[in-house]
Image (cartoon, rainbow, N blue to C red; front, side, top):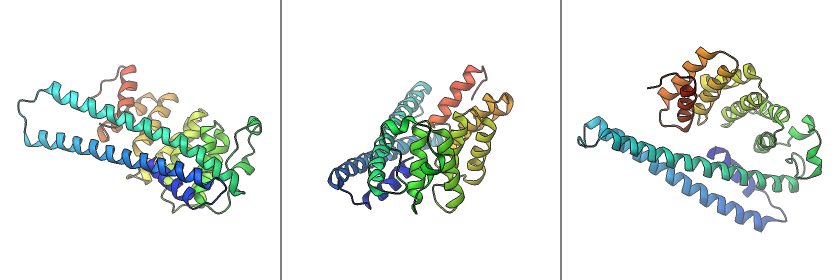
Length: 257
């Protein structure tokens, strides 16, 4: 998600407009927030690594299991705060991209106002001139506004037209989410599987595994869905997605390690 925000900042910085001074200040503020989030993420990662190294070397032998659990919970809580801050940045970036698109002509994002109350035009809304960032951002904005059909077209076009982009995995993931929100679970599963099978180092891999598992459960493939969530917990035990998976499995009265 931070990768998408950073790419959007590059797009915004490159565009001149009558509100350039205001946008520049907004961009500067967001860059500063991204830097702080990255710093906080690095600190949390270091804390996790130190905890793992201490356990592996048998250090702090007198440290109780309760102490270790408390430390993990504190780290997990800090990571949740980071997720909330990233989501807040996403909202701010959507507003800025809308401003830029409205001033830059073809390929602009939907404007706020009465025109958006009408049913979106798939062809007009998803067409963007030249820039893959604008195509992706337009689809993403449509998703945020609940125009899942239109957003799906945009993400699908992005994946087809820019196969070498470093955001293809993200486009496939969000395409899957579009189907998920429309309860088209089989279509959603197909997109999440593309991320899982083809992009093992993707930053959205844990999220894709979670959504695949939830889609399987929603389509009554309970056993396979449970296995998918258990696999997520095994591979990414400290992730936010793993916490959601554990809660879901608890609801199903399935034991987790």
